[in-house]
Length: 515
Image 1: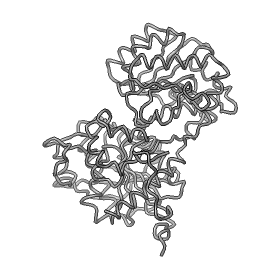
Image 2: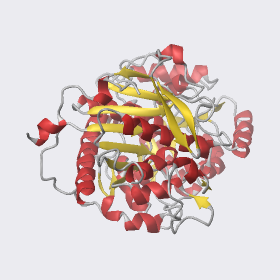
Image 3: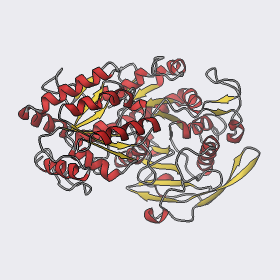
Image 4: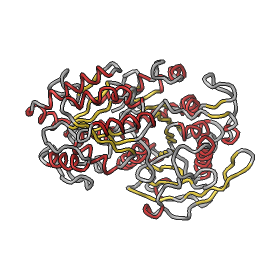
């Protein structure tokens, strides 16, 4: 029997049935050449948030879109996520039934059910236990560490008792990190040697908690060097145990090896450097498509961008900004926190407005910054709009109606905002860091291939200089039209990234067999 025949059964457990009970390695070298052709792979994802069912940030977009792209390549993919109380079960048609299991949890057990549904060839399996796992919010409950330990244990148990084992278990961020330690440890024999991949979406959030969580998870208490006495670092555990560690851009994979960006784990990551990959995220080009987007008043495309001016006028009217097609409009979408550069944007916002520009802000964040921006909006009616909270439809109207998109991040593992702004012909102004450095080419440094305006130093002056350079280009109509057309033609779909993930999965299987 050939390898392809072994892996390539027509119908997989993960896709259809359930039992009843751009990337490269961090050193920028090409990945190891694989000794065989890529065959069909059975892949299991585990994530705290998955679009469209529950979304807080970019993790949901990745966990919602990447599995579909992998399935389109012919692989069998299933996604596990908690059944949060905020998920609209009726809207998505999530059934009440599903397999039920008694899951070990410390010295007792918890009853968990696994309702599931299929969307675009991917089965999403909802892990349901209303007392230990389910909450109204995805994050922010005082027992987050305990409930995500329960989630990981429930996923491990379901995989261990399934009729067909996965080839790859792919966990995302600290919330599912303990699943990697479980598959690599106490569940290794039951899962028949499944390889593990752990993806870091944001190293700043590591899930620090008390070490007694290990008892609940059924994991040994032996402490890692990076863990303080009596403490647990789930992300560190996954980094240490995974066959492959990945992150969401090539530059970020390099940056996290340094003390500046490593968030205390740079030494541990350095030990795993040979197994560290960086693959830039894609975006769902069906959802983010100005030619078909039902959330914007006028449709347009790279071939015919005329509708964008109508979207700008409609956005200005909606947000109470002065309606003027020639007034440059900057969009800001995201959390009002220092990671996103709000501390260097805030001091120069009045200066940007004095250039004759407008700013439209959508987001929520630290109360101090929310208060400052409320004051700024009150002082600058007609030129500065602030919408606190998050509205997905309004976000897409801002992408469509703005001329430039501000993303001056202190650090940025990948960033999706700049990729979405490309799609809508909105030119990004970014700090050259992480995924922003990988995806935005400065239009002054490279006039023929430039796709935005970037700066290096994390200062308000450097940001303001990039803004001014963007405004100078904006006032040169032929240059600006060419720049808008260029960014709209960029391909940041998931197709290319998904192929890189498949290569990484095969490398993980090679590493698992070697181990």
